[in-house]
Length: 228
Image (cartoon, rainbow, N blue to C red):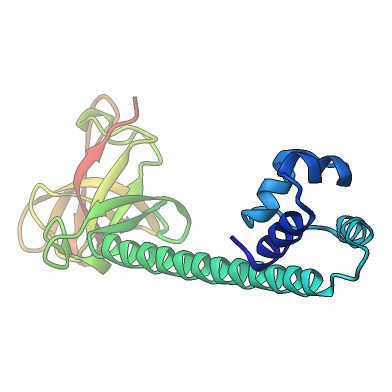
């Protein structure tokens, strides 16, 4: 029970009235009087004036009690808000922790066109021992296949190729290369220490002989994700 509620109860008992009788004189419901006495409701200024007329005296002590109760409610509201803010801060901190944790488990790998400048999107891949599929984090990428030059190898336009940066020529590897000022996907077959065959397949195999010194290997393809 609040102090204001206690004051109202004292006044009611001094007047020899029950809840229903006092409620009738004040023009309110019996339940309202009970809730005020229980501290669940607060009297407004109109009700206080009616009680003053009913008792024939000023009841400043009730007014003061009500103001104190209202102030207490404000304090309680502020306390709840502070608790809520703290709770939100904790949730944000937890989310940040999870984001940092996930960033160490998953990494966005960019999808590039052959020029390695235009980014078409990203794919998330797991990080294991600070590597992605055995390669350094800064060496992996996806390539968006731009043509059907390798359709005979089941590599079609629009497919995604997971690859890693390398400049080494590996026999039978399928790589992104730069040759004669153009970039393309080709299979490399070594002929000797100086020459290789650059193989494409648009339904039929085409092989072009090239000097190793004239070829710039950019990335080796590791696997293909086909477009259905």
